[in-house]
Image (cartoon, rainbow, N blue to C red; front, side, top):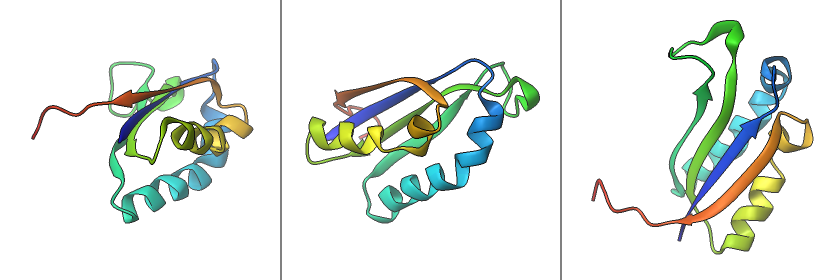
Length: 100
């Protein structure tokens, strides 16, 4: 089943985010290589593809996991969690309807 992982950043997280970004991306790339990733990306803090020093307010990942518990365990192990980038992470089941 698909699950949405929504991470909300602490204020002014850009420096912490950039420090652990390679580790974060490595985990997401493993999902992609396993054919389990639907989409992933950050929320710019301002209305811009490149928010510069304004940074990001969080991230969204939609991926396939065996269960809600497995998705939560995966999300809790993210470097953005352990390094304090995320102040809150929400994991929910997701039913993709479109595009088919």
